[in-house]
Length: 595
Image 1 (cartoon, helix red, strand yellow):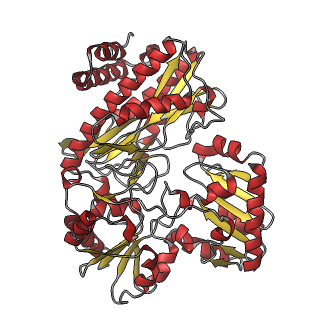
Image 2 (cartoon, one colour):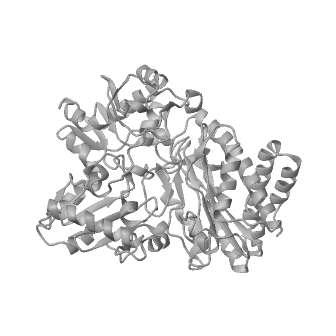
Image 3 (cartoon, one colour):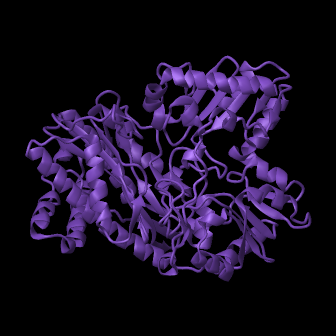
């Protein structure tokens, strides 16, 4: 594989020399700045072998670097081993940003190339300014990929379907009106978005273009005079066409988006999200683009009553699937039958597929045993696939997209006899998890202001984790959704009633084991006092934690009480959907902890 990677880089450099390009930047994204992308856009994977969901590659005429965040430090090192590519551990104090590295590496007068659709408005402007300060130029029209990747997959052609209002809770036409009103507050008459999750949410449409993300490849412009969806005709059905017409949306060919945007009257102020619209789109609207923030982010993140009811129901369905999966895993291991990480993922998928309204997984299942569990975003392959045996921990992070909601949970399970260190570390992680789950906070609180609560039990022992404690979750949509999060670096979005967020502290010991404990929590009103409104979290996920891993001697009575109360709720909610044998297993799995 490494020889193929080096050959591909050599072909890319031939194209760079012909175009007078000294360095090319390749973000791991698509023309919609998505986290999850279709096979057509796996450019970083093609040129590096790296399969993670976040990263950025820079290739010069004599060097190649791959920037990844902490989730992919181990995976990145493993997947580029043997190639000429060097790993850059983004976020560490000694690691320069890709821009800093370019400025220190290239000579004045150099030209940096990029496909302008793959970098946001704000990042494009910042990069252009930084390069200009060193007498360097940015070429946003350098896109030689098709000349090197000769068998590149085509753009997806999956059919679009309507997401029924009985699940969505609001008609598309109503949403368009709300978005335009919010855009007006930022000084714009219209709004353009290339974010696939925003388009799916606004129009109540879904598709299967991106694995695990039910979105349709398209661009959307909405205005009081009428709206346009740029999408390939092959993806549309008569039902969808009628649905769009009812919402006041016409369609146009996907590839015509730039040429059509140029023709929008200059007097029409069009709002673009500085982080989600690309530099190329901003250039097409030069002179009348209003660079601001998305008017969709908050309305999409704050779920309505219909969505919240669906989310609760979906999590009950998912909890039943998880219980049945855990029972099956336990039975196989007790019988001495072979089981691998891939086998665990297959069990989870099969049990979820049996549930009503199942559409797809919400992300590729992470089933990491032993040392593989310490790789934060690990996905088992045929070469890495471990057999589940011996004494260690199995980390399972999985979820599903149902028509009425999206799920995401992580459980760490003892296989054989866990060591004292494993039980101790698990309990530290759970203490942080419980601190978030039981927090009460005033209106306006952001996730960054809660994040340390989850880390404190680990910090006291000199341990930590580098990923965020929580991310927003969509509704039958992307499993990673903004604007809210719970993390050290602040996203400035307050936690608002109706937001669904993950609660997932962890700890990872390279070469030994990984631990993560994740539930989804819904922000809800808690109380109103003379000091204002206060909010809390309702835990939505329904699945037991492994009781054998709790070290109750380092837990407070309140922490033990929370676990016991949560487990009692899990049994109460799930038991009606289980048979007698399954109920018996769940009863034991949710029994009170012993102090």
